[in-house]
Amino acid sequence: MATQKQGVSLIRGGRLTDTAMRRAAPTDILIKDGVIVEMGLGLAAPEGAAVVNAEGLLLHPGLINAHTHGHGGLGRGQGDNFTLELLLAAAPWLGGGRNLADKKLTTLICAAEMVSKGCTAAYDLYYEFPIPSRDGMDAVAEAYSEVGMRAVVAPMVADRTMYEAIPGLVDSMPAPLQAEVAKLRLRPPEETLGAIGEILHHWRWAGQDIRAAVAPTIPHHCSDGFLCGCRDLAKKHGVALHSHVGESKVQAVVGMRQYGKTLVQHIDALGLIDEHFTAAHGIWLDDDDLRIIRDRGASLAHNPGSNMRLGNGMFRLRRALDLGVNIGIGTDGVNCSDNINMYEAMRYASMLSKVQTPDPSRWASVEEVYNAATVGSARALGFKDIGAIAPGMKADIVFLDLTAVSWIPHNWTVNQLVHAEDSCGVRHTMIGGEFVYYDRRHTRLDIAKLARDAEEARERLERLSAGMHDLYERLRPIIESFCPGLAMEPYHLNRYMCDAPNNGI
Image (cartoon, rainbow, N blue to C red; front, side, top):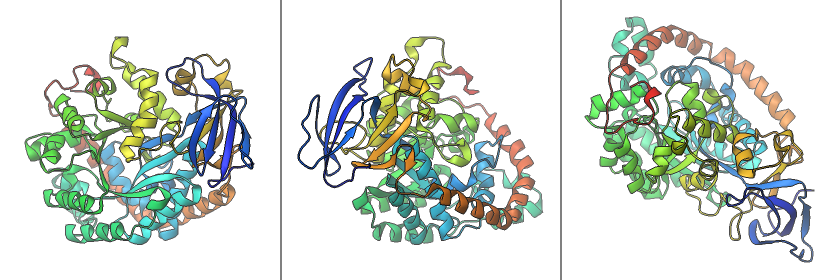
């Protein structure tokens, strides 16, 4: 029987994940109005409290996705051998033709997957073409609300297309294709900034811990004036900023060409980087870039799954941790990392830190990876009361079945969470004291209806986006040739990748 947000409940006998202990020990957790108020063994159940028997279950704080894209849900499984630039070229095909219901549906798909896989909050950089809308962002927030998740929803925006942002790319195309990509031009910057301002001014979801933010997508896809406009809107409305920085080598090379400095150095000079800023990916950052992020109190969202899937390289997790950068872990979008499984993201983060050097002293520990996916990601989202199971924290708790095969035998809790758990062990997911996923079933969502709605949308959108699919197929060989050639340019930076020689420098 599911507990409710309001009222009192007692979780009895579950084993509590603790990085200081090799094997989780039993504890009781008392929850009042969605907040943890007391912990310990043998707690008495207050009169009228709902008692949850958690014997045989492992408890850990809800995992927090530091970087994803709700618009990707309906694009699952559409492409293989995508580079980042090919994915961006495919965006009008993968996300085109959507109505308002589709925008909510694609987010519902993502949120449903996350809560079923132990994730209770997410930073969602949501893209609407050609301009973000109040109705669209409201639909995204409504989806998270219906599933019961916490979220930060950031309209992902730019005032330059990829074709305008990568020097020489359009010139490499025949005239007919140049004319086609010109039709994809974005709205004037002042119009887009005005639309963001409207969204932020009318945001009505913060009371449900669904917050707004602003996401200038990639620095060199934005003019300096547009970046400063995003910065000013964020400060005016007291919200955060999030951007893809140094995700691909193409970005790094273009940034140096355009600014004569790194992308991090450039946006820092514009005043974007502070304690409310998150840089996604950060593969092509040098030590000085990482120090800037650290010194400004900003965060970095590590997305190991899509970094590999798109062939972008290996983030230097060990080095960033050693320099004191706050690291969160993300999955990126379903359309470029295939699923939104934070257990898988943790495992990838651990493995990628290991393949960069044969020296185990320079690998990330399982405790560091687990902390990144919980408290580190919470900080990236701007939440101070989630990411841990402790008095005063919101009761966002995942219950894992210790009879699941990944836990047979149960030797080292955090190690098995990072390296063995694959989400099959998730029995329940609680958010704010309410079971939004109980006994392996959604409590707020009809998953069969979701599947039917998604299939109907898939068939309809496939017809509507056929022209954009054709355009993508004509663009693909040009982008496949031009962008890797650009990425072959030497890119030597201060102490860059000294511990990751396989990144292709």
